[in-house]
Image: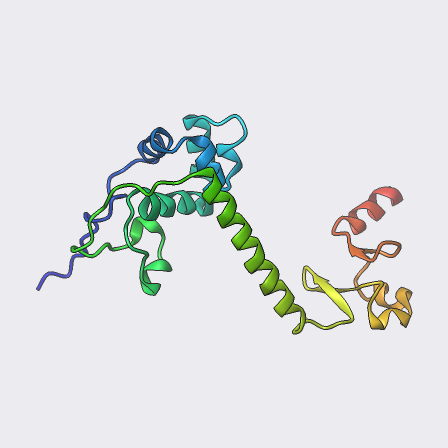
Length: 187
């Protein structure tokens, strides 16, 4: 019985990040890559070397580019829910799935996709508001009063003291540097 996992069917097997980027840039260009993947390394002074440097430092961005490579450029079917949880390089591609022609992408399609995601995000946020307490917002696990909320009649001073001096009392927003500024003023 063979217990070895065959990663060789994965198009990322043995492919360096630099070669992957060269293939993507040659086919799509930096502008389309930025439109679909939304990483600034594809927009601000784009170059292969700069992108490789950034992607090697940032795992989440590298996984985003590798997923784009697998499912847009190599046009493989989407990963199963179990495989989706794994990084793209560790995913097992079934033997019967083979890379196809790259997906044709355009800036117009990218704009439509971005608008669709924005609508979905707004709908999600709107639905989530029903589950949030109406008296305030949470920033970093701390509750901050919203001036327009029903609980704004409470003593703001008492509320802000409970936030461990990390909230600016005039604005009602969390300031993580408030304690550091107070220490600097004392010194």
